[in-house]
Image 1 (cartoon, rainbow, N blue to C red):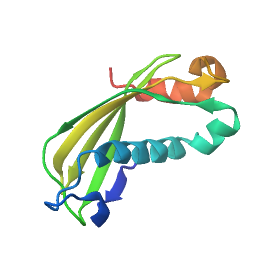
Image 2: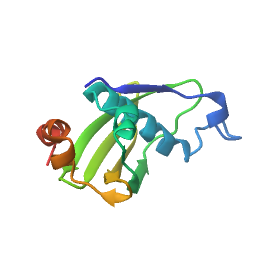
Image 3: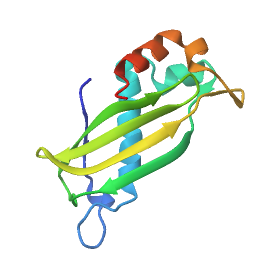
Image 4: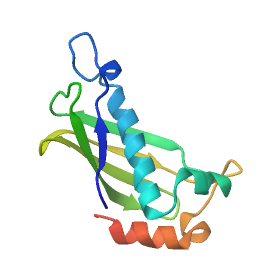
Amino acid sequence: MKPYIHSVNYYETDKMGVTHHSNYIRFMEEARIDFLNQLGYGFEKLEADGIVSPVTAVTFDYKRATTFPQEISIELSVEKCSAVKLVLGYTMSVDSKVVGTGTSTHCFLENGKLVSLETRYPELYKILKEMETK
């Protein structure tokens, strides 16, 4: 999988010229969308099939500040994958220096009800299980 690259926009910085902390969660979402697209299971496909994947938890540890117009390389990993839960890990770097790490936890819903990824999308489940780091 290729990393997702986010170029820090001027409007994403605060008065000190540093990327505002809230934006890193948005960058994680951008990377997650790109990750699923690379797997062939983009949000458009999932949502067209009636599947949504809400975030149930998110963490982020800030290591270094970023500024406009730096490019942040975001690498994703599958920390945990079960039939009903997916935990993704994120490592963000600028010039090979880690600027932050985080996780997002997701479930999968169809018509507002929990759905088994293993049953509904066995191919995607298999890919994610093979990528699992734990």
